[in-house]
Every structure is written in structure tokens, then in C-alpha cells.
Image (cartoon, rainbow, N blue to C red; front, side, top):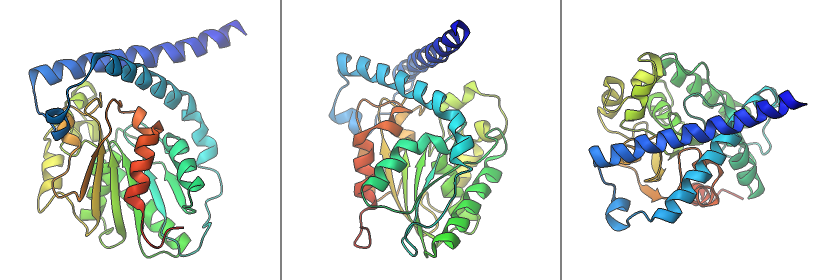
Length: 283
């Protein structure tokens, strides 16, 4: 039993240490390369809530790591239409994640009346983002066929946002998606990506990379979908925070004092997502 305890302790300590490292980088980036968002201009960060946000992010990252193996169950579970014809909500995770990243939000949305809520996985994260976007497009087409719906709504965390935009622009999803809601997505890339190996999706998610610039050609909101962004100025993975904003989005919601992983477990975020999804056909 002692080795199990030690393993669990390590699994809890490593996310905490990583969170501190990423927030040190976040602090340096804000000081060295200021790129204020509207939220920065309106409200200054306060020390105590900011420290509590760091602790919350460490806990959220720990939960994310511990729940990761549940993908074996989540991906293998029967996927069915709970309400034929109802527009599905498809949850698209970020770099290195999987479908279990959305376990809480998926449950929360279903409890509030959305029947067809699907969380999907794409792998492996280190390959070309265009190939990952094709997997996202394939998931959307499969779920539309399963539910008999004409269009889907997408809720995308982190890299899931740029992948969805690429699929709408280049992979045949134009006209098949009604709304795209992004949570802490690096729409202009992130300087944090420079810490990862310079290949595949990690390189393509670097700040103002050729892939990112390609996505912006002809408009940042492709495919005829309505775009909304939810972001936090304390997102420790999106550097600068302004990268999470999207030119042409119909709605931008700032959720203060939330880190990148904490966005996935926040009631404020869940309520903002629900408000963005509301229409007369829901319920």
C-alpha cells in the first residue's frame, strides 16, 4: 500500500509544481510583453484572489491528470442519440487531453436539458494539426449522422478552438456547425508552445505561427458559424491572454481568476456556455 500512496502523492505534487512554473512564466510574459485585454483595462488583479486562483488551477490540473485513464471507459461507452433530431453539442478538448477533460461539463449540460452532448478524443497530439482537425471533422460528421440533426454546436477547450476553425474553413464542416464556443483557445497561438518540441501541433500553436496566420486569412470566423469566446486573464497557458480573443466573435466573456484547466470545472464557465447555447429549440 505504501507504494500506491507514494504514487498518488507524486501525481498530486507534480501538477502543483507545474502550475507554479507556468504561473511564473505567465507573470514574466505579462511584464515583458504587455498585451492588455479589455478585462485588464477595466479591473486590476488583486493578490489574494490571484493566489486562490493558482491553488484552484493546481487542483484542476491534478483532477485532469487523475481522470485521464477514464478515457478507456469514456471512449468505449455506447454513443447513441438520446433525442433524435436534437442539435448535438460536441465537446472538443485541447492539446494532450482527451474526452474525459469534459466529464464535468458534459454532466452539467445534460442535467440542464441538453440530451445529445458528446465528448470526443483525437490523437496523438504531436502530429500535424491539420490531421487532428480532420479527426474533429470526422467526429462531427459521425455524430450528425447518428442524431439526424442538420447542424451541431461545438464547445472547444484550448487547441480544440483552432482545430475546429480549421475544419470549418478547409475540411467540409462549413454549414454543418451553428455555434462555436471556445474556452481559453489560442486563436493567435501561445508563447507557451515554445516549451514543447518544435514539431507537429505544438509548433503550429506557437504565437503568430504560419498555421495561425493561415487560419486568419479570409476572416478569423470561417464556415458560416457563430463564434463566442470565453477567456481569463489568468489563463497560464495562453500567452498573451489577448490570444484567446477572436476578431469577429459575436460574444466575448471574461471569467476572472481562472487558470487554463480550471476553465473546465468552473460553474461560471458552465453558465456562460449554457447562455451561449440557448435557443428556442432547446429543452
